[in-house]
Amino acid sequence: MPTERNEVLANQEMEARPQGNMASMFDRLIPILFVGDLTAERDFYITLGFAITYQGAEFPDFIALGHGSIEFGIERRESFASEFPDRVLIWQFGVKDIDTTRQRLTSAGVAFREEWVTPREDWKYQVLHARTPNGYHLMLEGPGE
Image (tube, rainbow, N blue to C red; front, side, top):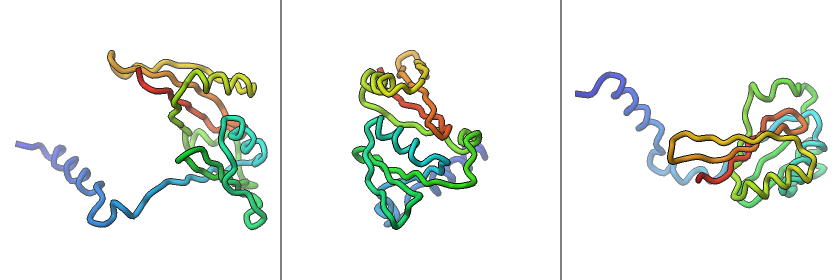
């Protein structure tokens, strides 16, 4: 006999599933990060291997960056306060090669710390933690071992 909690969870799961034609409605996510120093943030991501996918006179305080299927924007905001990004989001990217990523951070002079995460005995992965020029916590997660 299911408990009331199980029924609530089952109903939430059903509501979270795409209904009908909704599954094909969305095909990508393009977040936009607010920053105070647009140039420093742009240069940081270029150093990591991202390319500018949009920068133009139409939106002078906005730059889009991409790498493969990943794309996001950065936008200058006068009211941006670099002490608050952690209250908004932790920026996490999966990387194919943690050693290459470590070398790229080191070559760019980006300070970072390394951590092994072991959710279970049979599952572990390495994460590099860095800060972007505007204070975002950047986690670069390597493949699981």
